[in-house]
Image (cartoon, rainbow, N blue to C red; front, side, top):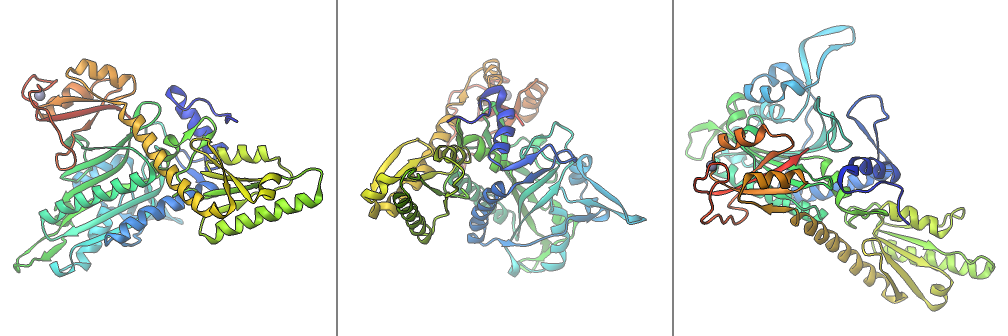
Length: 487
Ligand SMILES: [Zn+2]
């Protein structure tokens, strides 16, 4: 049965997205009377929890330490790094009054935490022996967005901001960490089945205060690229201003080198956008609040048989639960099985076990896969083995399906005009490019509905532009420039 939401692709995407968030009871948006903030509902909160657990595990395994920094930043600290301030000043919230008193030092609600952590690092870190330091926190941040806000995608309170911050003895160490961070994010997005392009942003679009920014972009069904992760090499920008001085191996004193990298609930928006169909969501088993739902099909006219079916269903439920799955037995009596199917399909439960009279008598179970809509009848003793195999297959199928859709929408053109046409149709275009950013800025950033994503990174992917000419100036091309409509 199809959900009542409009079509996901094309112009109705936003409407579809708001509809699915509401119908699947994930996120309540637009009703609380503060613009750009949302409310996570219990089911959505569980999805969010499993996404957070996934990134937390990857960070913990790679030596990152979780911390918690204050939300309030005094103006005196915030203003120290001038480029950073210029980048964020137009979008910070100020606390100017407390109780009946005007504050002597105004406070900023954190838009990100480089300034806070650098200030503290100047107190904590004195020697190379303490390095490298890799911290992260998962918190809310505030940014006064002036563009049209959108649930999970453009918010004024980003509720799920994972920011990591590292400190190193040398530039080379920071460079190595940038690649480590890129690899952590690749693994994270692969686990969630979200396809991405990794590009070095042009200087005009880097993080305020960074030497450079590497970004992960995906593409939503409306043909707009969405930035879902960034990694910044901060150089000594913050350490020099906040006086994070370190005694080095050779006994000289120098400022430390930093990186930072972040993701937000845009990741969850992407999971929802990619892994869904006309029936509703299809959650990757890794993050599904309910991985398997057991639905008994009651026997209407025979109390004895009815009891047997319920007991058998209970037994199957217990076995799955003991095996460690997140499983639910839907034994609500007021709903027909078909209504339960509709609800759990809408909410994206990856696997359903149907148990009726026939399954009970024959000691079998019927499994229904949410992604391919296939049904399997299996012998009861094979239950756990089959569930384990199918859940793995679902994760893999979703990832491949998403990558296929995404890859088909990335095309290379020799001419800028063709590339622009393609971007306006909703694709990501690549053009051969000489690398001159000023030229790219002047040719593209003034255009309506076309933005620069940046260039591929040779250490990450092979770039072959042999014999190609720059689509902007006709000179020799050294790389590609990627263009897209952007959020
Ligand atoms: Zn050129």
